[in-house]
Amino acid sequence: MEKKVASNKVLWIFAIGQLGWSMLSGIISNWLVFFYQPSADEIANGQTVFIPQGTFIGLTVIGLITAFGRIFDAVTDPLIAGKSDGLKHRLGRRIPFMRGAAVPFGIVTVLIFCSPVADTSRTNAVVLFVCAMIFYLCMTAYCTPYNALIPELGRTQNARINLSTFISVTYFFGTAAAYLVPNIAGAFSSMGYAASYRVTIGILACVAVVCMLVPAFLIDENAYADTTPSKTPAFKSLAATFKNKDFRLFVASDILYWIALTLFQTGLSFYITVLMGLESKMTFPLFAIMTVMSLVFYAPVNILAKRLGKKKLISFAFMFFAATFLVTAFAGLTPIPGFAYGVMIAVLAAVPMAILGILPQAVVADISEADKLETGESRQGMFYAARTFAFKMGQSAAMLLFTSIATINRDIPRGESGFGLGYRLTAVIAAVLCLAGGLVFFGYNEKKVIARIGGNNSEEE
Image 1: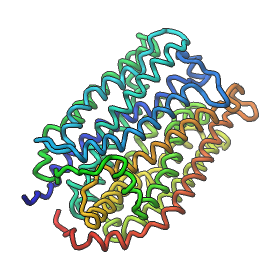
Image 2 (image 1 turned 180 degrees about the vertical axis):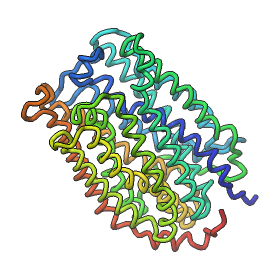
Image 3 (image 1 turned 60 degrees about the vertical axis):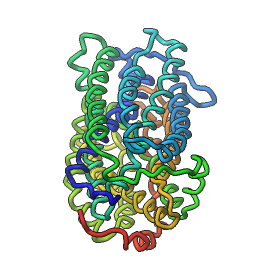
Image 4 (image 1 turned 30 degrees about the vertical axis):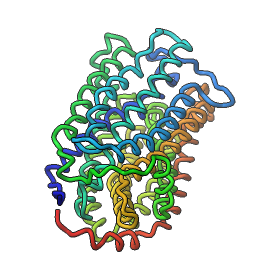
C-alpha cells in the first residue's frame, strides 16, 4: 500500500514530542552537575552537597556517574533500535515504544534530584547512579524510535528540511523551558533550595510527558511509514550501518561536535554565575536571547539549505561555534560587564545553533534513505541509533572532562589570579574540538548522497 506524504500539520504534531523529551534532557544536561557539584557561591546560597565531592585519579563522583550513564545509554541505543526495527505490531514499529517510555521517562527525571539522605552521603551517590541508568534507558526507549520516524515522515528533500526545522524549533523551546528551573524554583524558595528545584522539575516533567504522548497517540504510523520489520540482528545491523563511508565521516564530526557542545552546555551555568558573576536566574534570559536570535535565522537557513546544500552551512557553523566558545573563555577578563558579555555570546551562538539545530538530522535522513535504496533494507532506526551511540560516547567523555577540569583552581577566591581557570579551559577545549569537527565534515560527499536519492525525492510537500 502506497504511504501518504505527511502534511506540515502532521510534522508539527510530531515535533511536539521533541518539545517534551528535550525538556527532560535539558534538565539533566543543564542542572544535574550544577545541583550535585555546586560552586562555592551556590553552597553559600544554601545548596546542600548531597554526594562526595572528592576526586579519584582526577575523576569526580558526578563525572563518573554521568559518563557511565552516557556509555550505558550508547550501548542500549543499538539494542532498542534493533528491537524497534524488527518489531511487528498493529501500531507500527515506533509508536509502541514511544507510548510505553514517556511516563517512566518523566518520573525518573524527577527522582534523579530526590536524594534519600539530607546530607552528603554515599547512599545518595548510589541512588543517583541507579536513577541515572534508568533515565538513560527510558530516554533511549523513546528517542531512538522517535528519531527513526524522521526519514519516514520526511520522505522528500523539502519535507526533511521542514521537519528538521520544526523539531529544531520545539527543541529550542524545550531546552529554554529547562533553563527556567532556577527562575520557577524561586517561587518555591520558602521550601528550601533543593525542594524548590524538585517541585519545579516535577512540574516541568508533567508538561514534558503530555508533549511526548501527543505524537504517540495522534499520528498513525502505518499511514506514513514502512512498518516492515527488519530481520537483521541488532549488532550486525549496527556493523552494516557503519560500513557506510559517508555516515562514518558524519559521525566522526558529530562526535567532536557533541563533546564540544556538551562541555559548553554543562559549563554554561558556571560561565554565567562564576565567570560573569551573575545569578543563576540569568541563565534563562540569556538563553532566551540566543533562542530568539536563532529563530530569526531559521527561515534563511531553511531556504539556503535547499539552494546551497547542507554541507557548506554545517561546515560554516562548526567554525563559527568554535570562535564563540573561544570568546566565552575570556568572560570576566575584559572590562565588558557580565550581562553584556553574556548577550554577546548569546548572539554569536545563535547563528551556528540555528544551522546545527536543523541540518544534521536531515543529513542522517539523506544517508539512511540512500542506504535503503542501495541495500533494500529499511534500517532508519539503526542509523539514528548509530549516530546517538557515537555522540553519546562523546558526551560521556565530555562529562568526565568537564567535571574533572572544572575542579582546577576551584577553591581560589573571586578576584585572585587564576580564579575560574578550570571553567575557562573547558571552553577552550570545546573550541578546539568544534574546529576539528568542522574539518572532518569537509570529507562528507553530499553530492553523491543526494544524487543517489534524487530520483526518489520529488519536491512535493
